[in-house]
Image 1 (cartoon, rainbow, N blue to C red):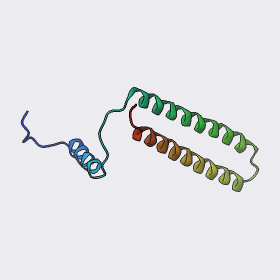
Image 2 (image 1 turned 180 degrees about the vertical axis):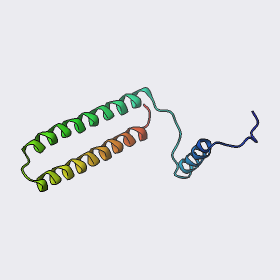
Image 3 (image 1 turned 90 degrees about the vertical axis):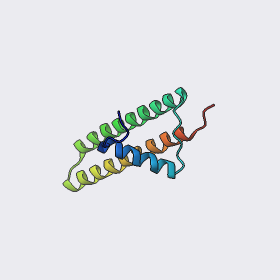
Image 4 (image 1 turned 90 degrees about the horizontal axis):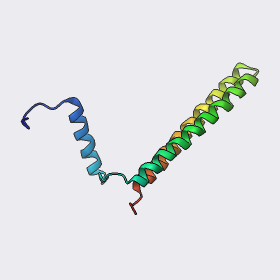
Length: 101
Protein backbone atom coordinates (compact mmCIF):
# COMPACT_ATOMS: atom_id res chain seq x y z
CA UNK A 1 0.00 0.00 0.00
CA UNK A 2 1.06 3.51 -0.68
CA UNK A 3 1.69 6.02 2.11
CA UNK A 4 -0.22 8.58 0.03
CA UNK A 5 -3.57 6.90 0.64
CA UNK A 6 -6.15 8.82 2.69
CA UNK A 7 -6.14 8.04 6.39
CA UNK A 8 -9.22 6.83 8.21
CA UNK A 9 -10.68 8.78 11.12
CA UNK A 10 -9.33 6.08 13.44
CA UNK A 11 -5.81 6.42 12.07
CA UNK A 12 -5.96 10.20 12.40
CA UNK A 13 -7.22 9.97 15.99
CA UNK A 14 -4.49 7.48 16.94
CA UNK A 15 -1.88 9.72 15.34
CA UNK A 16 -3.12 12.69 17.40
CA UNK A 17 -3.09 10.60 20.61
CA UNK A 18 0.47 9.43 19.94
CA UNK A 19 1.50 13.05 19.37
CA UNK A 20 -0.15 14.14 22.67
CA UNK A 21 1.62 11.32 24.51
CA UNK A 22 4.90 12.33 22.94
CA UNK A 23 4.39 15.96 23.99
CA UNK A 24 3.50 14.85 27.53
CA UNK A 25 6.66 12.68 27.66
CA UNK A 26 4.68 9.49 28.04
CA UNK A 27 6.76 6.63 26.77
CA UNK A 28 5.26 3.82 24.78
CA UNK A 29 6.99 0.87 26.41
CA UNK A 30 5.11 -2.42 26.64
CA UNK A 31 3.87 -3.63 30.01
CA UNK A 32 5.68 -6.44 31.77
CA UNK A 33 3.83 -9.61 32.73
CA UNK A 34 3.99 -8.48 36.37
CA UNK A 35 2.43 -5.13 35.48
CA UNK A 36 -0.32 -6.83 33.48
CA UNK A 37 -1.07 -9.12 36.41
CA UNK A 38 -1.09 -6.21 38.87
CA UNK A 39 -3.44 -4.20 36.63
CA UNK A 40 -5.79 -7.18 36.27
CA UNK A 41 -5.74 -7.65 40.05
CA UNK A 42 -6.49 -3.95 40.64
CA UNK A 43 -9.38 -4.03 38.18
CA UNK A 44 -10.81 -7.14 39.82
CA UNK A 45 -10.42 -5.64 43.31
CA UNK A 46 -12.26 -2.43 42.40
CA UNK A 47 -14.93 -4.35 40.47
CA UNK A 48 -15.59 -6.33 43.65
CA UNK A 49 -15.69 -3.13 45.73
CA UNK A 50 -18.29 -1.60 43.37
CA UNK A 51 -20.38 -4.79 43.49
CA UNK A 52 -20.20 -4.79 47.29
CA UNK A 53 -21.25 -1.14 47.40
CA UNK A 54 -24.19 -1.82 45.05
CA UNK A 55 -25.40 -4.70 47.26
CA UNK A 56 -25.25 -2.48 50.33
CA UNK A 57 -27.08 0.22 48.39
CA UNK A 58 -29.91 -2.14 47.45
CA UNK A 59 -30.32 -3.14 51.10
CA UNK A 60 -30.40 0.51 52.15
CA UNK A 61 -32.99 1.30 49.47
CA UNK A 62 -35.29 -1.40 50.81
CA UNK A 63 -35.06 0.19 54.27
CA UNK A 64 -35.53 3.76 52.98
CA UNK A 65 -38.74 5.44 54.02
CA UNK A 66 -38.89 8.65 52.04
CA UNK A 67 -38.22 9.85 48.54
CA UNK A 68 -35.56 12.25 49.89
CA UNK A 69 -33.76 9.39 51.61
CA UNK A 70 -33.77 7.40 48.36
CA UNK A 71 -32.31 10.39 46.51
CA UNK A 72 -29.62 10.77 49.19
CA UNK A 73 -28.73 7.08 48.96
CA UNK A 74 -28.56 7.24 45.16
CA UNK A 75 -26.28 10.29 45.35
CA UNK A 76 -24.04 8.52 47.88
CA UNK A 77 -23.79 5.50 45.57
CA UNK A 78 -22.91 7.71 42.62
CA UNK A 79 -20.16 9.46 44.62
CA UNK A 80 -18.80 6.17 45.98
CA UNK A 81 -18.67 4.60 42.52
CA UNK A 82 -16.96 7.69 41.11
CA UNK A 83 -14.40 7.60 43.93
CA UNK A 84 -13.73 3.90 43.38
CA UNK A 85 -13.26 4.41 39.62
CA UNK A 86 -10.84 7.27 40.30
CA UNK A 87 -8.95 5.15 42.85
CA UNK A 88 -8.77 2.28 40.34
CA UNK A 89 -7.52 4.52 37.54
CA UNK A 90 -4.93 6.12 39.85
CA UNK A 91 -3.70 2.66 40.94
CA UNK A 92 -3.43 1.47 37.32
CA UNK A 93 -1.52 4.61 36.33
CA UNK A 94 0.83 4.02 39.27
CA UNK A 95 1.42 0.43 38.12
CA UNK A 96 2.09 1.61 34.56
CA UNK A 97 4.66 4.14 35.80
CA UNK A 98 6.59 1.53 37.80
CA UNK A 99 9.92 0.60 36.33
CA UNK A 100 10.20 -3.00 35.24
CA UNK A 101 12.42 -4.98 37.60
